[in-house]
Image (cartoon, rainbow, N blue to C red):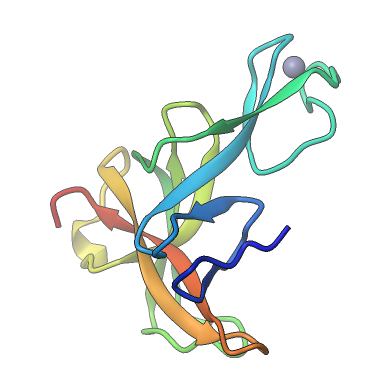
Length: 142
Ligand SMILES: [Zn+2]
């Protein structure tokens, strides 16, 4: 199954985020356990809490609240963004936490529990010339 959209954009992580046809909107993908209700980001083959294999694929919210963050002064090799930058873990209402860069936010004003929303940003092209679409966090209303 190809994850490429009509726009020629591809999700940076197709197992965790699905793009719509024109590549302008993304939806986080999760797996929910039908036994205990635990919801996790991405694919699973069994539940990490109760080990049940009775799982269902679910769409997750694109909004959440900032659970924790760190300010990165030494980025990974190949990092093309600003330094330092904020790496935030955002808790979705369904339970999973999603780690990504928090953009457009002064690190001085960042607060735990602040509402965040997922935004898409263009990354580099892949080997086939398709634009890799990244998901980032942005403060709600920013
Ligand atoms: Zn379970």
